[in-house]
Image (cartoon, rainbow, N blue to C red; front, side, top):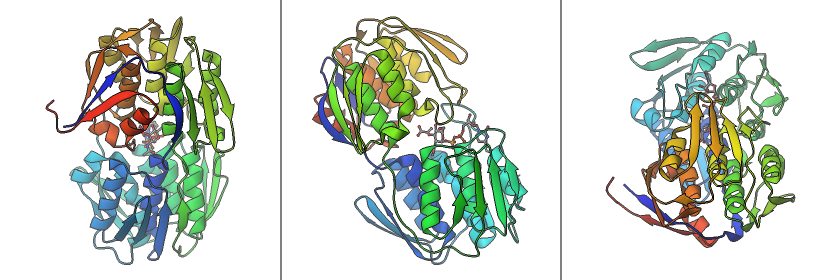
Length: 420
Ligand code: EPZ
């Protein structure tokens, strides 16, 4: 198992580019199952979750050809309609093949995802929505089995603006008979990117990016040609890293319009942020002030940047209250920060962080993707050495992050195949 060693005290400076968004690439890759035509998806990130998705597509019978960040998927005929436990347990997003398989071949069998390090994460909203479109869905021996002779458009009111359920519905409704309306839809930029990809296949979708999405089903979809949008969470991670190390960094391919909530908070903390059409520059020369954050569905503050922002709070001046409202258990990193000397009091969905001048390096354990990167950030402002174990979580969603941070001046290295 690899581990990462960070020696703190360096200021980040320079330019860095972000990769394509993992959380947009995954549903877009799965939507290639909706057609028998070749689909070209560009700007996919080189991360473990994307490799898992490509493996799943090829297990299902699609031909997958990859050339760097560009991939062509052709699901001319499907060899299977099942996503096995082994794959779904490595990546919960695999559950999103259920709908496309159902819409394409009328049946699907996908392992039911379990809980994970950040919470229970049920799929009831996905299942309920598919049932409203006419699917019969049941749970059999740990598998969600779905069948539908015909899918028919419906009016679906989501109890919560779930990203995955909204994506699932957009894919399925694109091939259903008639019109589907999604009320209380998720509004994340990744939803809009998936809608763009589906429209390039001939789908008729309106309202994506708003709470009410209307999809008029079409009998068949053609191939797609789509470039995945840049990863706003990777971009945000670099902005936070630069701000907390009193650095000066230009983050290229970052779309500031997708990063408003973070940019506002970094400004409130005392960093200077310049917004340009396709890059953002952050400059910070002093210790930042603590700010309160509360995670919310987009356009609120993203839960996927909460851990990184908490890392920043541990060394800011004053007190920050971090409130997590999206996931029930997304504070595992707080206990690891405390091992580095951070002053954090946890109380249910709130973490009260009293900033200290400097953290103190120690071995720590990554528990999920965003927790892993937040520990790297904390290590960059800790004295001595911080050793981060279980970095396979990191590799699920960040492309060569240690190389990118090293290029900005961080003292960071990966030790391959280390024990523990
Ligand atoms: C997506 O997960 C992202 N994953 C997550 O990114 C991200 O944290 C999350 O959206 C919120 O922004 C991908 O896009 C692959 P949800 P998703 O459905 O779709 C509850 C990362 O680090 N819920 O909006 O699973 C659920 O339990 C990850 O990159 C139900 O109760 O998120 C959670 O509390 C982690 N029933 C909340 O809604 C359901 O049927 C938000 O989940 C579905 C969700």
